[in-house]
Amino acid sequence: MKLVFITIGLLLLGVAGLAIKLWTKKDGKFAGTCASQNPHLNKEGESCGYCGKAADLCENR
Image (cartoon, rainbow, N blue to C red; front, side, top):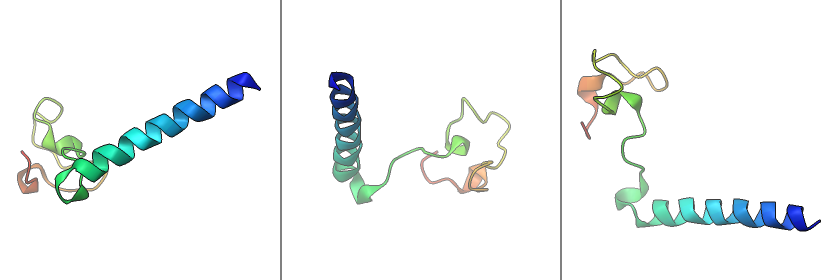
């Protein structure tokens, strides 16, 4: 039972950390969540496989 409480506590701590990070960010957005915005991961300038946005359309590049 002690392990369950520790696990739940750590999960709550992680969720609280993400909530605080989102709360402190400008406009409530995480920066650089698309792989197409990272020049180290996208050297060929391909579009994002998740959202489909082209690399030249990313605003944080």
